[in-house]
Image 1: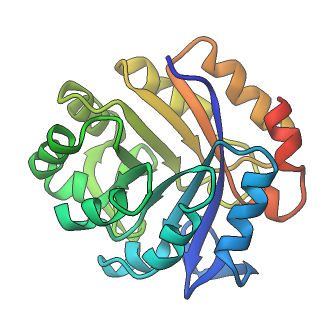
Image 2: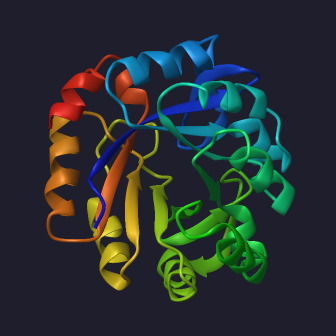
Length: 242
């Protein structure tokens, strides 16, 4: 089991740092004009990892904000990125430009065998399977569409193919600050041996502590924190001290 990690999040849209409410592109709040400055602030605060999402890319299916991601990856911090990653070339583009891990979401639902080939080629440490779920069912295309597959079935399939890292986002809690769906994450973590990163709903240090506690009895390996940091509910330093 890897060290439990805090992943401060930077969501990119139109070159700016934004947050959406429950994945709704119509409910957007802009928190900054410079993703690089935001990433540097997180790195300076002690973050070992930064979680970045190209929201434009997730919606349109092509890399759009990759320049900002690659710029952030020049900092002394590990960057994992998702959104708009659809091809082998997309993965290679990021990994050869300093990004530590790429997150594959929609493609994992639509073309699982292709994604398995990516895990085999680039290695399980470089590929993260992103599972975004509504009521336990996997969603795709920037959360706009819901597939007919359960999150657990998707996770079990990729774990059986060697995937090591998963991000589970409960769309109902994302951006709400109402607390994460820990039970859903534990259920996923208990179903196979891969490591689960919790995403969605973190609103307090107590939420962070609860996820950390859950990690001590399951394969939960980290937590992504976005809006709570931007809304000054607590600082990254305080989260890291948990």
